[in-house]
Length: 447
Image (cartoon, rainbow, N blue to C red; front, side):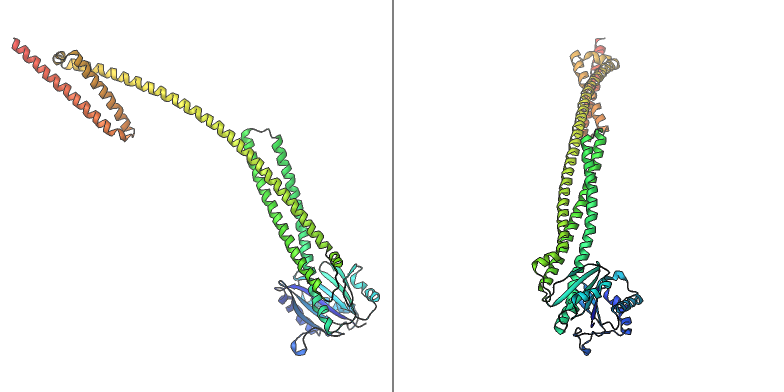
């Protein structure tokens, strides 16, 4: 059986130099040669294949490093030799996004060919890919390890580009879709668990609001704590919704690109029904993401409503507290006003007592210090002078007290009052002395 085998390694562009740097020397020692322009370039055009390796891009930061060879003995020995070279190179398996093996065996009975390689696929079910010239079976040995059995009608230069490159690019898109889909499946499971926990928390908060019989102060604190938890949970749900929407858009973009590639590939024969069947699992994932996004939107709306309810309750509690505080303030102001009224009464009383005491003692002092002059002043004049002196003295002492307490705006009034008091006092003393001297002269003349 004349066979040719393509071995594809799918890599990120930044990992390719390190991988190739480890594998290429060992492959060259084993007889493999890189494709170059000097030895013809291009892909192998006929069977059996010479041992070659080359690299090509699959777009968007990834590439394929490919091997071509034909088994010298059994295919099992050839596969084992490649595995042995990988182990000798110490290749980091995490560096490889995926790999695919394509066995090219034209001109052989299809069923015999599948039976010949059934040991390689380990009983895994295969999916036939429709090609226009031949048969092609795809086996997924694992999500990242694919095995193809190809039975083209003919392998020549015109078909070599599909088998040696475009099939790998087709597989790279499917690998990318699979990686994105599996990642989204894990994210979806995580989001569903978190959302279920948040929904349970929301139910507990709403139940607590219905049966709460705590004191007003404690209830306000509890509502504030609930509001903090609700806003945090709302942010988590919003983040999860954004994550799901972004993942859905990424998967849709990969599927759109992959679908265009399948429809434009001339070697493939996908009609719409087959294309829908081929994409069925990925469309189911998109449906799951759409449903999850809708559920998250409902949860987000529920949390928004709960936040508004708790905020309304906090506002009501605060309004009630504000009303009570205002009532207490009003009572204090009324009490203060009453005290001010009483203080004003006491001030009036104290001023009146001060006036009476000052009038009495100033009158007595005037009478005792200058009895003759005092007796010569009419009683009405005495009364008016004592009233003026006592009133002015009381007024002046009050202004002086206010000034000493820092009310400097009364300074001008205080000065005027002091001057008036001094003038009045001087007038009383001078008048009394004058009248006393007049009385003494009159008495001398009489004798």
